[in-house]
Image (tube, rainbow, N blue to C red; front, side, top):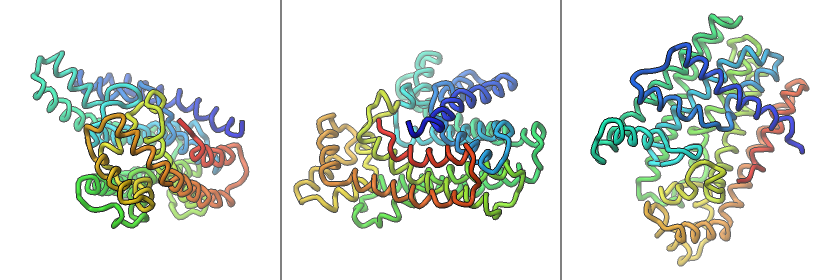
Length: 364
């Protein structure tokens, strides 16, 4: 199998990262109260591909660095990603994450069972706890990064540069993308009036920026260098940035065509939420008036039936929306790969190349 080395590495990281995080959690003796402790660790204990920490570790190794030295930073990136998932699930009102209840649903259940709250009060409790859980995880992430200054032979300016970039550029870019996504979902603005480049840029802000950071941080740690303009660091940053966009484009496809038991999250939720994606835009461009009317009547309908979701899904395939978005993801991978040309040959470089192609071929 052509992805063997990358998949094997990913499986190893999938086991290592939760252990690093939970060992740190035990040293802290947990969080208080119990509802925060349980919610803050719930996604970590459920499994997951851990792609972002894997990318950070591969970037570190690709510039000749010690993979083990980057492990705490990789775990911190997973924590950063996790708090964004908690908040995103709340914003999107998703009920499943990795096959189990999302944090706000978990906390709501605890409100009903542990506190005896009414349905309405338990719902508000769940929402509030989800916000606070994300806050705790965010702080936990930064704490793990600062600990690297004392536990590894890294220059303090490398650690501080990484933290500053995460807390300024990455955080603000990610929130900007999330706000734009919320705006597009709520306004009556026609998706055909929104340039495709703007939709893709929103995806990059929501997803690509953290992959970009993983590549940059891994390379900085690998070289023990705080210079974000170093050619190898720039190359890995740009490679991961473009791959991150490809990943999200592919994720949009899987959110429609995937199987819920494999994805671990609701399929069709993007249709029910009225998400404005490149899939929808391309399909509407090719649709007849009657086809467009059907898509628009169901898009954003929160109580859409499975049959209605199936109808829209069929149209998105038949009208070329899925294929168009697949082609876009391939184009971003093709744009990414040449950035590795100046990175010396190694198993880590090979795995990065495999990761890029694995993303656009993964199928659930």
